[in-house]
Length: 210
Length: 225
Image (cartoon, each protein chain N blue to C red):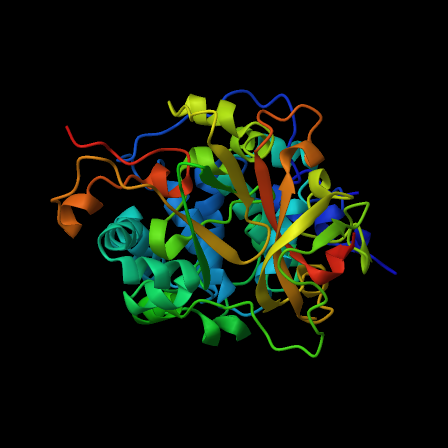
């Protein structure tokens, strides 16, 4: 057996401590060093930020959910092989290479967590919100999901069981929430507007139309 | 047996604070820069996702706990850049040289970002290891939760789910084994399963008798039950 203990970050002299302590200055310092050596291109950083700030986000997942609510064949295909189906809509890439969609029913509510880090389906939901990456959510979602749901204002009936999906591998999960009542005549766009980010993580429910 | 990041089931963290659906993607400008520097540095090709996760997990527990999310990313990245010899401590001190780096040829260019992000990096690989379990079968996770190739090494079996009996939900295919890949020991792909556990198998006081937790677990994390 080899020892992992010789790695520099196990050494008391942690290299990251050589950077300025203030977080914004740390990032700036590292970016400057890497840029000066030609290892990163600041214009590429701008492009990455723009992608996740403006182009990729929960609107992608909402479109998938709305389609599944409208089209039973699409829904069946989505539940069978989500990676293939969402890639057909143009949603594929980093942190979404292996997608699984799970369906909420009156009998079972699903919710997603990553207790070990922050795994999240980027191409469909974008960058995770702060709470998803918090110690409190990571620690508690698996042990007391109903108390966590209550903190989001969600109370489930006692006949509904909760299944929590801990994303321990490269599989990324998206929840297909139940279609709200009173939405029968709505088109895909109107339905997509009801689908919240949290409803696709499983900590919320879709908006009920007024 | 594991490290500070393995917090599933832990007590004492307080409430979860929900956020607006319409809040900014990056609540501070430097958060976006931290994410972008980290993503762009991946394209230098000096590590894989498992090595990167392990670098964050190897932060001192006191640092891991006090750092905000993107501070962990930057600290992990900085340590990796030194460990892999991309940068030197003098570079971090500001006294390194400014000459073009031999790896600069690999730097991600702005015009290649869209293609690079949408290409992704799938983790499924062919393997000669046959699937040992089928959906519906009872399995038990190994105990303790620990890397069996490298002492103190990376693993994706959380402590809270070790030594627990569950049922295979589905076979996901065959995937790179993080316990090996995080330490440069090869991708060692093997069957990966979703396994469901009754909450009562994991916790002494589950909230509801019907509640369950599903984890994605590699075949070597499992034995027949």
